[in-house]
Length: 444
Image (cartoon, rainbow, N blue to C red):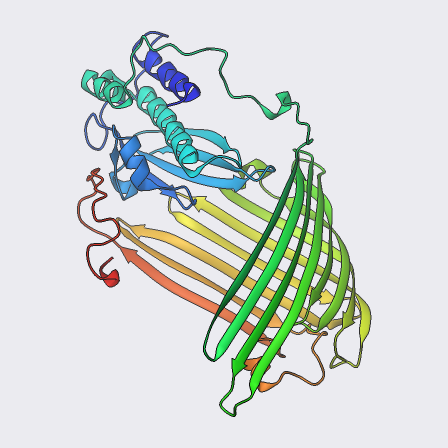
């Protein structure tokens, strides 16, 4: 355990033990007596509940909120340097009227183990504060259980000079700029088929409370060779590349303005070269700081795009410049009952409003009752803006391999599911034996 986590936990324990003045206890009994019961609700990559059960062993981890004293919601978002900011909301359930929030920022250079350790320590601090505020630590046995589990004592010494340094105190020689380079080559095949994929990418970004700047580029080469039944070989080779930029400015508490740009070559969409510049404005109905829990935004952009085509289009053009505008509305929430989001985007070309595109998408994961939840997600688009389609259309081989975009009026996708779990909710035991075996894969 590092020093800042030890210091924070000791401060909470010292308060509860009367070393820094007692806090009034609101209640001393939880759902399961003196022992604190916790339900964690998270969907982050580092939501390793097995690890949390092992490291935070002095609470009951329950699998439904109805059996918990505190509902912990864990969310995350990417920081400007490429790390992650984790937000922890501690919400009291039943007779516990309580709500608190903690955050932790993991640097992009942190290992998985370092991230998990810091997340577990932050969770411990929040749960200890909840236990102190609601009188759980009035129980001597519970207090001894916590100190034994954490291997702490009042005599532990912490260097008061060691603390978290804020961003404003950093003398950054890079001025918050972050650069990345990457590449990959993949070759696979069999006797009658071979594919080669090579790509490279780079990015440069700078994020401050006022400005957000992202510059990204990529290039890819793809080649396919497939032996056909008539003895011939179908071969397709193509190179795509692209460069995009985003510059956004925080205009006010709920307003942002910016400009997006793009240079690109996309063979599948019959475009040898495309260049566009699109100013935009965004309004957030909720403060941007609440984005990990709830967001309601309206985004409008307008701008021209130049296209140089590989083949003549269905409208008889080899190149053209067209203005387009779009409006996007998005609502998302992560609450105790589950997650939900819905978005609708509409766009059209200014020279002909009949050339439009409308997309509706949404998803929900709703907890109906104890152990029972349902989920659904779907999207549908009405498409009438494919001005880039080649006049000669796609060959059968290109259609089967999805190498060339074909005309369409709409597309959609739907998915439904449910989850029902029953049995004991109080088992905190972690057993990692036979983690990679134990029977055929369909048993696991």
